[in-house]
Structure formats: structure tokens, C-alpha cells
Length: 222
Image (cartoon, rainbow, N blue to C red):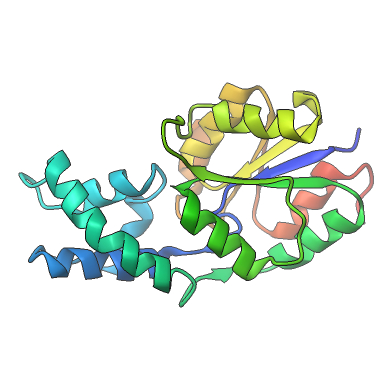
């Protein structure tokens, strides 16, 4: 098998378990405006399509207006910017995987639907010594996943061909994004969504542990 030259990772639910900080920050914003809050576990099904969609899904029925989403966002962003690494942690084996790929000369990048400021801060905090080709989150006037534009942008920056890329994510949105970009795609089962959601989109690979990604990238199992 030919070695992959570039691996693009989703952030939330793939590289890092961020759900506790997302839940805490959303509940803070909801409570500040007098809305009911939610159990942490329920947030696994609210995230994945950007912060505004997370907040819309968290508002009560009948309150999901654009105006209310923006009101909650104004409470959420300053709080999350301060607290987005309080409880979040890399998933087991991910730090070792990133260091191994770096040692082997494999290029790496991050493509997230989290807004850019938080995406950059979290990656720098947890992986300060990994020289990612790009760390791209949700940006003004840029389409979000499953639109493949962010993967195309990263592939161009890295100077590789789509056939030389592996995209790794934990949700149906990620599986759609990889398919839309025409790249080999790997679903991970340790994230926020059930394996059945990954199966629905028929990615080329589904793995249960970080180490299982290695032979999908390097020509021999190490």
C-alpha cells in the first residue's frame, strides 16, 4: 500500500474530547439568558455543524430564532474562549499517533467546524510541538463541512494529490466531507456519534483505536 502524504483530522470527537467544555459553556450561556440547561451527554448530538447550530439545537422549541441564537452566542463565545481547555483532553493514543506521523514525515492538518479562534487555541494548547500544515476552523464567508472546500484548501496548501490524503473524523458530517472531497476517509468510534452513523456513509475505514490508523497511512504496520 502506498504511503499517505497528508492526514487531515477533525477536532472535536476525533483528536480531542471537548464535550464537557462545550456543554459547560453552552449551559452557562443558556442559564445567563434564563433558558433551561441540558445534561452533558446530550451535547454529543448537538455538536458537529458549527457553534450556531449547537446553540440553535440547545434552545427550547419555539425559541430557535436567529436573534436568540446570536444572543446566546454573545454569552457563549467569551466564556468558551476562556474555558475551552478546562476539561477537554486528547483521546487515548492520539498524541503518540501525531508524534509518530511527524517523525515519519507525514504532513498533518486539522479541519473543524468550530470557530477559528477556538480551534487554533485548543490545538496549540494540546499539541504545541506538532507542525500542522494548516489548522482551519469555521471562518467568515467560508462554507463549513460537509462542504469539501476546507479539505480542498488544505490539500492545495500541502501540495499533495487527493489520492495521497486520509481524512479522519467521528461523525456522519465528516464521512460526507471526505466523500465530497474525493479522499480516502476513516471513521473513529471513540467520538461523539455512534458507529451506526459512520456505517451509514460507508467510509473506506472505521477504527476503534488510534493505533489502527497507522497502517492506513504508512506502507507497513509499525
